[in-house]
Amino acid sequence: MTTKRDYAKEYKDYQGKPAQIAAHSQRNAARAKVGLAVGDPREADHKNPISNGDSNRKDNLRAIARSTNRKKGAK
Image 1 (tube, rainbow, N blue to C red):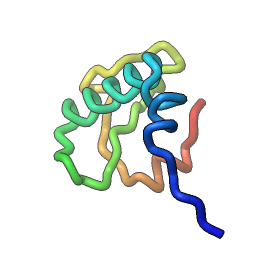
Image 2 (image 1 turned 135 degrees about the horizontal axis):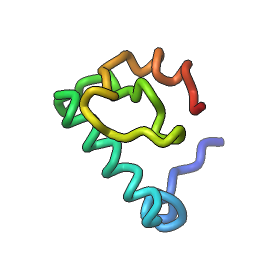
Image 3 (image 1 turned 90 degrees about the vertical axis):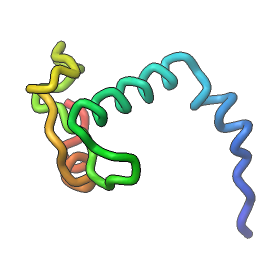
Image 4 (image 1 turned 90 degrees about the horizontal axis):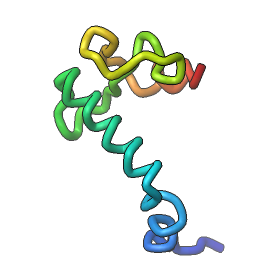
């Protein structure tokens, strides 16, 4: 049996949290710096991860396929 998703609950419980809103904003900023248009299936990849103390500088970003970026995972 398939249940309908409760998008309002998902937003309230997860996507609407300040940390998630900030992360989404950061992803959008990285996409803009790389020059990815809305609807472009590629993702902005950080050569040196933010988790290692790097940033969204343009020279630290590149556009790669979503599948490639997801295989890299968080480091």
